[in-house]
Image (cartoon, rainbow, N blue to C red):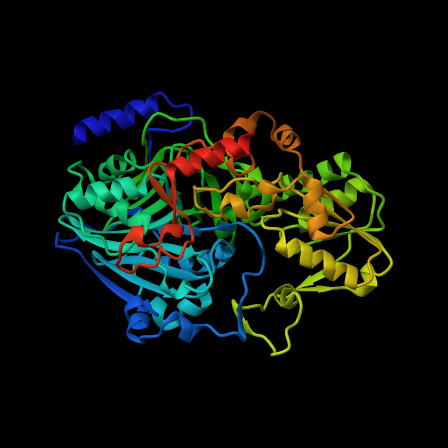
Length: 567
C-alpha cells in the first residue's frame, strides 16, 4: 500500500505545474539533529481551563448567564475559524511559535495552544483565551525543543470555554503526532461513522480528530505517506501542520481553500503559517505558498515536497482578501492591502455619490475607504474610533442603553460628522443588525446624510470551508433586495461591490477563487450532514451528535439553498 501511494504522489507531482518533487538541503547545521536511541514516544499535556475542570464546577448555563450580562461579538461578521503555525530547526521554537500566534490573533481569540518536541517527547500547552492569557514564561519553559506547532481558535461566544483547543496530540503504535488544523471537512460525519463502526473511539466532536484516526489506522510507510493516505479521504478545506518526534509536516487541500505559507529564518529554520504577517514578526523571509494539494515534509535531511493527488482548479477563499487577513499580509500570492484599496476604488467609480467626507468602519474597512476617498477626491477622516479593549461580555446598567454593544466598541467623532454628507465604507453586511446601529450612531452624531458602501458582494449563502457564517435564512442579502436592506439599516444610499467587478479586478486569477458565499455554488458539495463551524456542538463533550439538530445541516437542505441562492 505504501509503495502504491508513493507512486501515486510522485506521478501527481510529475503532472503538476506547481507542486515539486524535490529535496532541498538547507545550508545551515540547524537542520542536523542528533539520532537518538529509539524509544516509544510520550506526550505531556499542560492545559489551562481544561474541560474536565469546567465540568467539575457543576455550573449550568443558567448559572453563567444573567439579564445584566450581555455577550458581545464586536462585529456582525463572518468569523475565521483559526490560524496555524509550525517551526522546525530553532532552539526557541516554542517562543517563536508564541510570537507568531500573536500575529495571527485576529484569526481566533477564544483559545490557543502550542506543542513542541524534546527528547522524542511531545509537550503540549493549551488554554482558553488570548495568546497572552494562555502562555506565560513558566508555560513556555515547559515547551522545550527545536520543533513546535501552534494554533489559535475562534468559537462562538457563551460556550467558548468548552471548545476544543488545538493542537491535538495523539499516540498510536509507532509514536505520537500533534496536529493543528484550519478549515472544515464537509464529509466529517460520514468518515466518523465509518471509523466508529470499525472500533474507533472519539474523545471530541472535532473534525480534526478524524484526521488523527485515519493516520493511526493507515498501514502506509513512511509516516508522511500515512498523512497522504488520510488526506486522500478528506473532502473540504484543510490547511494543517503535523508534528512527530522528528518531522514537521505541512498539508493543504487540493482546492487551496485556506491559506498556508512557507518561510525561512536567517538561521535556516523553516516556518509555516496561515499568513505572512506571522513570518514578519519572527523575522522569517517569505518563500512561497504551500501549493494546493501539496505535502511538505521537513526533517534532518531537508525539505521534501510531494503532491497529495492530481490538482483541481484552486478555489481560494476570497474573503481572506475582503476581511479575514491582515492588510500587511500576502495571501494567495496577492497583497491584501492592494486588493482592499482596489475594492474601494471600484466602489467610488461604479457607485459614486456627492459627499463631504469618507470614513471607515474600523478596522477592516479602512483600506477600502482609503481607496474610495482617493478615487473620489474626497478627504478620508476618522469618523469612528474603535476601542481595542473590548472583551467578550459586559455588565450592562439596569436601565438599558440602546445599541450598547456597538457603542462599547465604536465611538463617533462629532467634529468629523456633524452637518456632513458621509460615505461609510465597510467590508460586508451579514445580518444587517450591526450596520443599522452604526448608521444610527453616525446620524445621532449630526451627520446630514449617510451613504453605505460595502467592499464585497452581498453574502447570500453559508460557508462550509472553515468560516463561521449564519444559516442562509439569517443572511439579510439572502432575503432582501439592496433597496430593502437600505431601508432596514436606515442609510440614504447603499451599494455593494459588484461580483463581476470583483472578478475583473482579479483578472486571470478570478477562476482560482471561491465565491460560494456570494453565489451559493459550492466547489465541494457537503455530504450527509455537515457541522457548522463555530457551533456549540463542537465542544469536546460526549453525547449524541443527533441530539442537537441545529448544529447540523442536511445535504438536501444545502442543495436546496444552493439552488435558491444561485437564482
